Length: 90
Image (tube, rainbow, N blue to C red; front, side, top):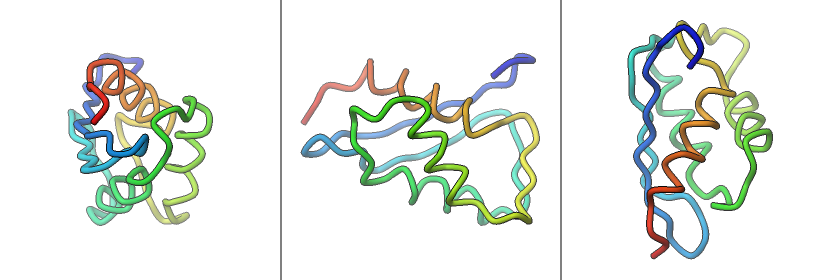
C-alpha cells in the first residue's frame, strides 16, 4: 500500500477459485464487520481475475458507511494477486 502500510492476504485456490481468504495487515476498518465482508466477497472469485475486477468486488461488498484507513480496494487486489503468485493451485 502506498505510504508503507502492510496489507497481506492468505488464501487457497480450489478449482480455480479463491477460498479461505483472510485479509490482515497494518490498517483499520470501521465497522469491524467490513473485514468479514471483504473476505467473503473475495472467496469464490476466479483465481485469474485481474486487479481491477478484484478491487471492484471489494468496493461492491462494502457499504457507504465503511471507513478504510491505511487500505484501499486497489491495495487489497494487489495483495490478492501477489498471494496467488505464491500459491500452488490445488
